Length: 354
Image 1 (cartoon, rainbow, N blue to C red):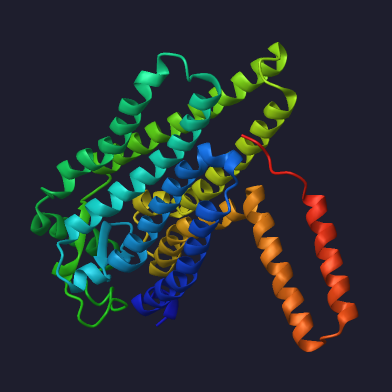
Image 2: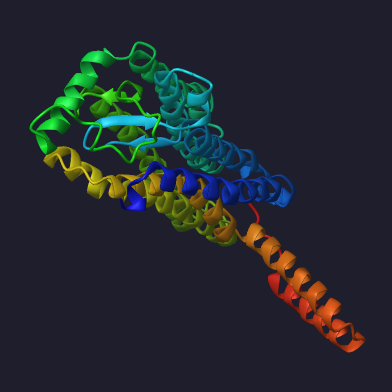
């Protein structure tokens, strides 16, 4: 049997990615808390909020749930910690969907924060923004509770899934042999059917996701349009406008790259559901791609925001100095390296002001 089809492969990857992600997230949190310059304090807590939701998503997905997806059936075999603790699968998915939704809203919060501080501090938006953000954060969890707290009839849903897959591969209802790649303790009744077909839940998730996406693009557009207007009217200084444009580009990159990570598996999942295609190896790789979202988000943040990557360069440089000093502890080399480092720092210049 192809190893990529198995749950062992998926479990091994979950273990590896969590081992990598947790240090990256901790380093990202350290940079935000202690290396964000005072001039960026207005955005500091919004960025930390985004990081916290990314960490919660990774922990929920790769430790607590560990889904083994069975597309084209909208069904899952959970392999995570919460399953061993016998936490109901419907509650596990409720938490996953809610955290994922709040992660999207946290990105909206960053864009709204910029829009408010730059252009709307003395307008009606000052009174509206808190209820707007609060409603945004609560909409997803309240909405998903309607589906996962009172899930569909699993016995009936399992029969539907079994019949669909049986028609695809068998002339009878012996389905377990097709899923021999699932752990030996697997029982068909352990599968949780999220939706028996591409039905109401799936469409509703798309609507909520599209709403958050529209909000992201709306605030991005408002920021860009107002910055351009300010440049024409000289409402803001050229330096301020240049800095804000640079920061906005960085935020948009931080938004777009993780979105691409999430969207790319849909090029297989969509046709698989519509055309009733079952290839477990591709299912596993789609799940793996989803699991990389939080890691990619934090990594991109560290790479594109100037104070953070400058700190990384600084740390790397000192590590290099320490290594050179340990292997060849001559005063000439040390002083030369220190001089290079000082020259590098002088080229860094002052931190951008917000």
